[in-house]
Image 1: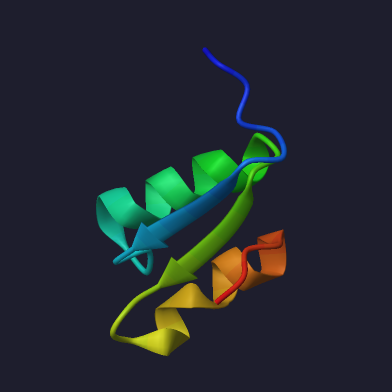
Image 2: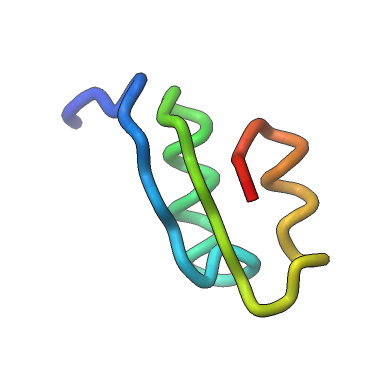
Length: 53
């Protein structure tokens, strides 16, 4: 896999499902992740991992 460390990534619909899994994968691999969802409460777990809401 290509390294994503240090890259900036924008994930929409990151509060659940595939969007959440993709955002989590990027965070765990060192990317700077910006994530949004229509239900802000769903994003708390990603914010705790270092994602920007």
